[in-house]
Image 1 (cartoon, rainbow, N blue to C red):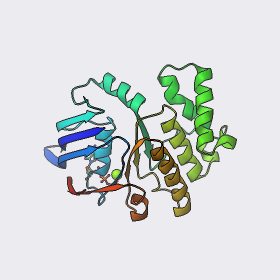
Image 2 (image 1 turned 30 degrees about the horizontal axis):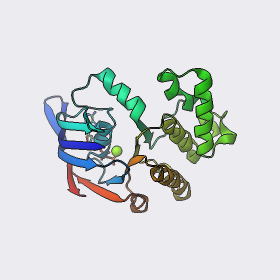
Image 3 (image 1 turned 30 degrees about the vertical axis):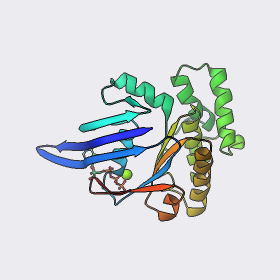
Image 4 (image 1 turned 90 degrees about the vertical axis):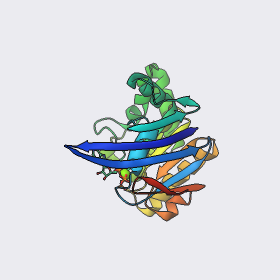
Length: 221
Ligand SMILES: Nc1ncnc2c1ncn2[C@@H]1O[C@H](COP(=O)(O)OP(=O)(O)OP(=O)(O)O)[C@@H](O)[C@H]1O
Ligand SMILES: [Mg+2]
């Protein structure tokens, strides 16, 4: 599913080079559930953003589902991203003035689905995450766990093959975090490949493999 070879990422800050990823080679197979752990600043989010086509590596190659994405134009990358990848972030990243239903419809409307079809699928997706009775609530009318469910419903509504979650439970208490992880477990059981970043060992234990990143390199996997 994911083949990274010798990926580096270097940021230029004025005249100073910051080597954030220093040569990451990694294969993740379709259907895997992988956790990425490592200290703050070790490059986990940078790596996730590269895997999710939100950022490009400085050097190295990346193939997603057997196709090289390194050479794709930004437009083609956006196309792959919107059809194949779902994202969940620590801070939920919801639009403050849009109710749950409309948030979840957005990726479908972006893909060109008609409103009726988008609404039906968004309702199904919200129902699947247990929010059938919260569809018309705004983010600030929802609890943290419910907001993250909306974000998951939004990520799921396009039926992505790959789900990327960067500290999805980082802003939640442990009980609510457990509910979110149960949802990800269900998704993985249905065949969705999942990559999650976490600082918490008990969260990482939901994954079948843990990759430790240290100072821009894979330490153990
Ligand atoms: N756009 C950027 N420009 C310059 N430096 C950056 C940029 N993005 C990230 N960095 C630097 O890259 C390093 C790795 O950042 P990254 O966000 O990948 O860490 P992380 O492992 O996700 O940390 P955390 O656990 O705190 O989320 C940090 O030192 C950060 O300051
Ligand atoms: Mg991070």
